Image (cartoon, rainbow, N blue to C red; front, side):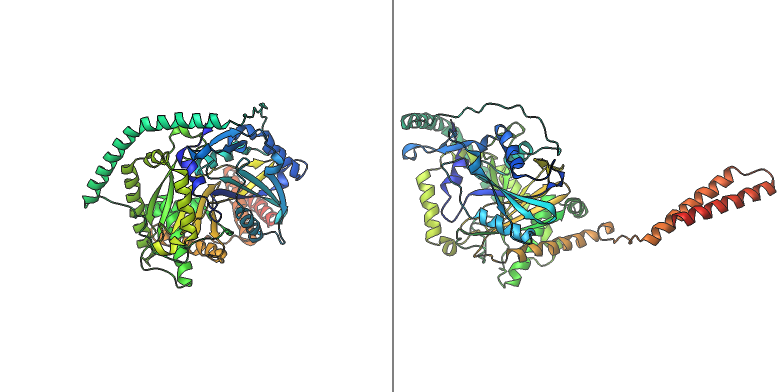
Length: 527
């Protein structure tokens, strides 16, 4: 039995009928590398063999009576893999849009809290002998960093897989109400004991923030609750749509180097350019800059394998009020630098420490009222969009022998912020997932297609500093290849003739002719 942290539990408390707090990933797999061809059972058994490596897959929630404290995790005594791993067909012709349609439907269904909080759907019938694989897990169980860690545990590094020593799973006994109340009381006493230090640290943090605010030379990020209202920032319904986009990772790094900014700044600038185009097309671009909330991992090296959420957040301006892409990127870079400074002043664990005091009834009631009374429209948004950037593995991954060729992450949306953009680097690509409320943003694929133009303008900007970014390579034709090989062959022959030539002029001339004759024959053969 293990108590949820305050941050983990908060994702449960703020979940409503419309605002689902699960994260997801849509993967595309090439099954041609599977031994004996694709079989659904092969994928399912692959997952079964690795359950011991992913504790989140076999734990379920138990609520504490009267909500005296956060719920606890127990090893589910009734765990059944058949409930969690399912398969479904993809509509024809089985392209990315059809896959996204299925993924959106899966994302629209909340997870059953009486079971471990995850599902995996194998989607058959994709083009090019491929399958889709949608995994959704409740945010109470993982954050971005632990999600990436699950990828390395669940997947293999080769199609052949690896040997995993089986470990007997020992399910927990469901604790009695008395046990839960006693455990909650002990936890509350420990929390009260630690509160003195937390209050002291918070007071020092507030004093530091005030001093910083009064310093004209200090830099700051954006301020929550100052985001301008847009069509993206209204109350949401229960239905989701998703779309995908992909950018070349090395090219994005080249742009970053040429323009002297961080890779995260480039990602935010691409998102800013995308949203600016989309809102302009709908005549809804506000005069003020959009504000993004960007989750930040606060894990230390020793906490990399911890499953709990260890995340804070920073607010950054997307500078969408600036038309010039260069000036916009500069403003974003300055805002993110200031936001990071603000975050350092507040402290990495201040948010997570105070979240331990989150009250289930208060949070739950506030979330339901905020949505049902449509307060997002009347009070204004906290932020316009959530943009999360998660580093993924630079090497190929396999499940049941099938190669993962694309991995599109999808984060939750909420009342007042009907768009989530999540970014994951995988191998040589940056894979981007758009999760939206289907009523607010029915044309999400139009938004996703705007992303390439937003990236191209940054490449063009970087090309002014580094011309190789925009230099077009000369086309290689069959004729040019033959000519190049023939020239190379002729040069080798001449060199050989020169090396083996006789001292006498007559012998030298004879050898040279022979060399040229051989060179001609070789060139003719290559052509």
